[in-house]
Length: 183
Image (cartoon, rainbow, N blue to C red):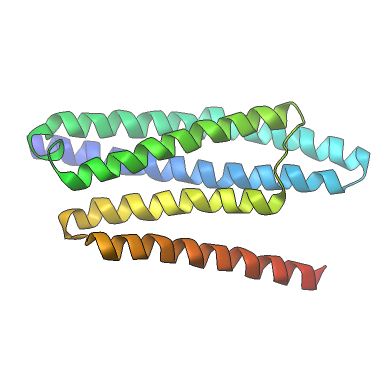
């Protein structure tokens, strides 16, 4: 019975984790749209930015933040059900470290929402694209740590982390070049 309960909780944890990341990824995309609306005429800018703020608020408060809370709740629940193993596993400490950084990322993104609500987002669209990839690095790191557990070699893990980061940065640069050629 405990394993069945644990499996249901784990499934819910994963479902809300996917929802949380989807919300974070789309939120930063909305920040980019908000920022790029400043290049439009004043009338278009006002209409677009007002609409983006409404979309951001709904996404943040109806999907992203509740998904974060439920991810954490189900994660803590799993930790309490299997604490004799999970709380002593070194890979779990590393995973929880990345989750803590992800929660900081979440709340910093919330500050960016506040800036958009005030009409004062000071990031460039390129900086926002890089910010979006930080969440991707967290996703890749957390999933690999959780799936591979103790099998993950520290050297290969570190090289892989930076390799993914480099690939993401190259992808952003390629996107920027392609976008300039289409403009």
